[in-house]
Length: 170
Image (cartoon, rainbow, N blue to C red):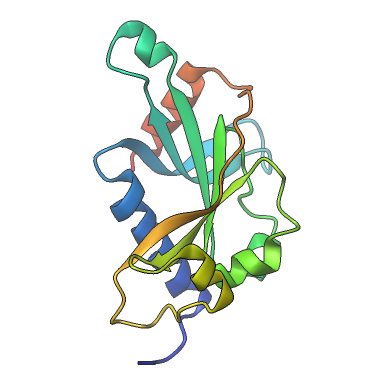
């Protein structure tokens, strides 16, 4: 089964939808979040998705919550574009295709994890060896962790990040 190859925009949309459907649906998250808005032209940073994960619903559980940043990268050129490699959460992930993961594997920051689009019934190692074309409509796609994120200390306050998420309105 093969069709036309997805272009960069279609691949980004495919990966973003997969992230929302498989990882973020029913969770606290926002998309296209701008950090440092109004600090001067060129100073703003954008992140594709931010998820807030409280420990529980108590006051202390909310205070101990963590932020996970996700950057969607459709290809190696997208990764190197200089846009959106904002990794300021306790955990940070690149969401990409297996093909792109193989190309950027040794270039990404060591603490940043990677989610890759992978057929649900396929082992990630097999997918690494022989990636499935994204336009294969017979496949039930999901995201699998190719590399776990290493937690890091966040520099921004919880209030600030929650405000940025609310302001994004998405």
